[in-house]
Image (cartoon, rainbow, N blue to C red; front, side):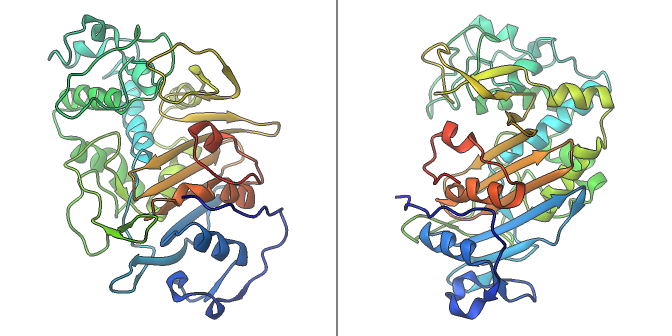
Length: 366
C-alpha cells in the first residue's frame, strides 16, 4: 500500500550526513549526502533505488543515484545502472516515427495497412488507423489484448483518446516494414548512436548492470526482459535518457516543422479516464491533452511534455519544459516508484502536476 506522505514547500535543500540513514540509501558518487526529504520519501514508499537526471537551461546536471540495484549483493545504483524504462519507450519510438515523417518515408495520415498489409484483426476498421492516430492513442484498441485473445476495436479509430500499447505494436510493424530492419537496429542507428546513448537498447538481455526489481513487500523480481517492443522494452540509464530529452529540446534530428507537429496537442483527454474503451469522453480535462507520443500539461506558467513508465516493479517518469529547456527524468526499481513523482516535479520544476492524479496513482499533494 502507498503510505501517506508529508507535504513540503520549496524550502532550501538542507544536506545532512548520509550516515544517519539506512545504508540502502547509499549514494553512488563521492558526495555522501542525501536531501532529508528524499531519504524520508524513499523509506516511506519502500523505494529500493532511484536514478535522477535533471536538465536546467539545456545543461544536464550530474546524475544523482541513491539506493541499491541489488539488495542481495549490496550493489548500488550508479550512472551505468540499467533500468526498464517501461512506457518511456514510447517517446523514443515516437521520435523515430517523426524522423521517418520528416524524410517522407511515412505519412502521418496514410493508413498503416499501406505500409504493413498483414491483417492484424478481423475488424475492418483497422484500415483507418494511421500513425497520427496511434501516437495520440485514438486507435480504439485496448491497452493490451488478453493473453491468447483477439485484438478488438472498441470505437471508430480517431474518435477519442484511450491509451493503448497495442497501437504502438502495430505502428512498430509498419516502421520495421518501411526500414526493413528490427526496431533494435533502427533505434541504435537513428537514436542511440547519434545521441551518444551508449547504455540503451530495446532488446533486453542479461547484463550485470541491470537493476533488480522489488515489490512493495521488499521481495526481489528478475529484471524485465523483452525481444524488442516499441511500447515498453527500452532499457536505459538516467544519463542516456537525459541526452534524448536534450536532443528533443534542441530539435536535433528533426526539422522545426516536424518537431512542432510532434509536440502539439492532438486530443483532449477525459479527466476521469486513461483507458477509455468502454465509454465515450464525458469530462474533458482542462489541463491535459495528448500530442504525438507525449502527454501535454498546461499550467498557469508553462506547457510541459510528460510521460510515465510502469512495468510493475520498475517505475519511471519524465517531465519537460521545452521552451525553457528544463527537464526531469527518474527511474526506480520499485513497485511504488511513482508515488514520489509529484514531489520530484515540485522540488525540481516548481510545478504542482495533475498527471499522477489523472493516472490514478496514490500520491500526496505538493
